[in-house]
Image (tube, rainbow, N blue to C red; front, side, top):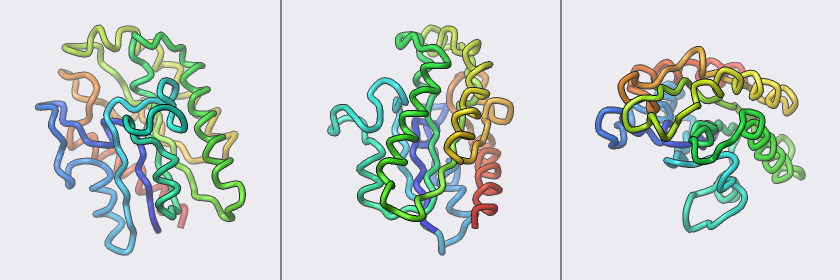
Amino acid sequence: MNILCFGDSNTFGISPVDGKRLAECERWPGMLAELLGSDQLVIEAGQPNRTLVNDPPFDGDKSGIKYLKPYLEVHTVDVVIIQLGTNDLKARFDLTPEQISQGLTQLLIDIKDFYQSVNPAPKIIILSPARVYEVGNYKNIYSGAAKKLKYLGALFSDVVSKFDCKLVDCYPRISPCVKEGIHFDAIAHKRLTNQIFNIIKQLK
């Protein structure tokens, strides 16, 4: 089984302590690979600042953010795990929860279109955004995000049900560092890994 982990800085594994990348054994794609064993290939494709709506994955300058489509063209994958939406909550984008969920809808439509002649297409697991704490350096950047997040999980759930995907609703389950506000520590990565692993076991 080949599993593509496509997401933002929490897929990449940015540390809330020093801003560097967590070790492979501390970030969820690496932990997932360890749990699944050497017979499964886990492809890490996390990129800080990646979004759903602005600079959408199937458009824009390909020399900047690495988008999903090139990964799908290069790799044969059985499962795609998508962790996006948090960066869309930034105040400068001024997006509503509905607009962010529409971005997820469009991404899933693009994936479906890409695999329209392939049977079976990969299974898709969506990780909805976790909590955001409007503190420290991120206080102004994510102003208003906490309020939007109260509605975003339900909207993501509605989208996922229409596309026959699996959902990990991270909002009630995963919390970032309370002092830094956005990124997960190794404990949160481990908790997320267990949630994903349980779903993948059901897909086999």
